[in-house]
Image (cartoon, rainbow, N blue to C red; front, side, top):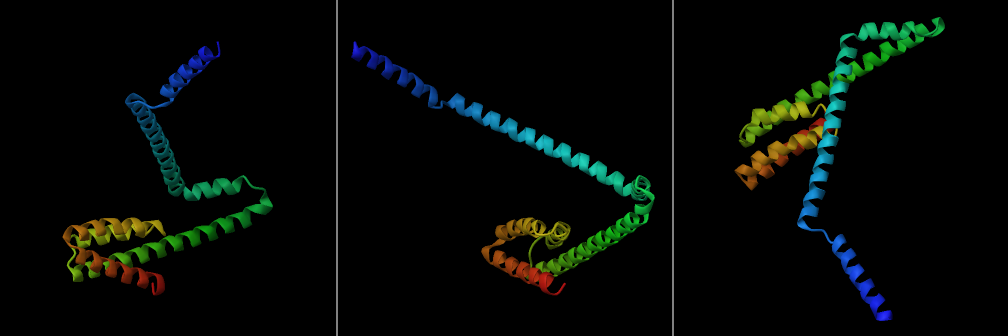
Length: 178
């Protein structure tokens, strides 16, 4: 009869609904799979960064040999222009890195002076961290403010305001003068 089919349909829907509703063990499985995926991605990223570091190290270590080898593979008429271009790129990139390091040093010194004036604990360490992180454009200063913010917040909210004023002044000077 019709109602018998309806009961079977209702029962099958209840069974399917309970199969769709996650239980505690399902959540644990989802979390463990997510954790496994995260660790897998992190392992791949660490592996990639390690490989890049070693390749970069040996390229820098043997830069002249690499350039000579690369140029030796080219046809005779392209050797001089390519060698000149590589030298020009090397000079420009080297100058950029030297400039970034000088700017980072200035940021570290200014932050140390500012942190000392406002009495922020661990000013030298925080300024040193900020100087190293400021080598990385855009992201470095954002990351560098975090430890200083935490130290200032552990002191008082007034110290947070003072630290933000010092940080703002240093960033203004770095962006407009240095």
